Amino acid sequence: MTRPPTPPGDFRTAGSTFHPPRYTRVTEAVRRGYDAYARRARAWTVGYQERGGRVHCGAGCVACCNMPIRVSLAEALVTAQALTDEEAARVEAHARRVIQNARTAPDDDVYVERHRREVGFCPLLDRSTGGCSRYDVRPTRCRDTFSALPARYCEAGAWENMNRRERDAYRREVARTPGTDGELHFIAPLEHLSEPIWASAAKAMRTEWGLEAWGDFWVLTTLARDPAFMASVERGDARGAWRAARAAGLAHPTVLELG
Image 1 (tube, rainbow, N blue to C red):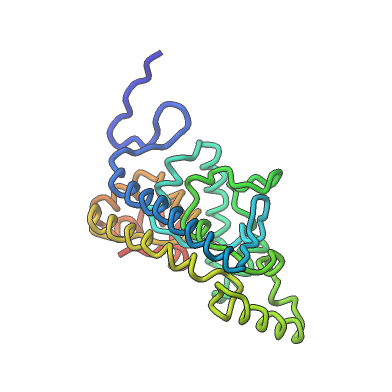
Image 2 (tube, rainbow, N blue to C red):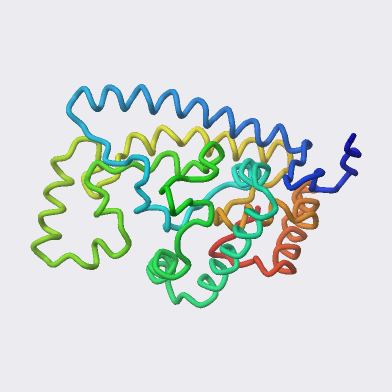
C-alpha cells in the first residue's frame, strides 16, 4: 500500500520514525564531521598503539554511559531522526529526570553526581549486551571519550572512593601515561580531534537558523521532535524556542542554551 506524503510541518512519517527532511543541511554537516572524525581518530589510534599506548575502551564497557552529555541541536536532530516512537518515549522520560535533577541540584558537582547515580544510564544503552542501540548516530561526546587507564576509573564515584594514597597513585599514573593531558585519564588528542564537529554544527545552525542551540543530549533530542520548539528555531526566534521548551517542561539554563 502506498503511504501518503508527510504533510508540511508534520514531524512524523508513516510508521514510527521522525524525519524532517528540511533540516538536511544542518544534519549533513554533522554527519560529514562524524565521518571525518572516524577517519582521523582511527589513524591516530593506530599510531598511538604502535608507540605503546593503550585504549581501554571496548564493546560491552558501559562505565561512562551514565555521564551527562552536552550536544548541539544539530547533533540531537541526527539522533532524533533515527529513533522509533518507543525509543523517543524512553529518551523523553530520561530527559524529564535530567530536568528534575537540574532544577534541584545546588551546584554542578551535585548535578553530575546525581546524573550518574540517580538519573542513570542512557536509555539507548542495551544493558543486556553493553552496546549502544543507536551507535551510528551517537553524539560527539560518545565518540571521542576514550580511557588510557582501566574502566574502573570511569565509573561513578571512582575518584570520591579513593583514599589519599590511591589518589596520589592515580595522579602519578596519569602523568606518565601517554595520550592524557596529565590530569585526567581520558585520551586528550582524541577529544581534540572532534572539535571540528562542534565548529561545523555551530556554523550550520547559524547559517540555517540564525541562532545556535546547545544543551543536554536527551533534552535536545526530545525537543528536536517538538513542532513548536523547532518552528521557533527555524525562525531564529530564541525567545519563542525557550517558551516552547518551557511549555514542554524542558527548559532550564543548565540543560538548554539558546542564542
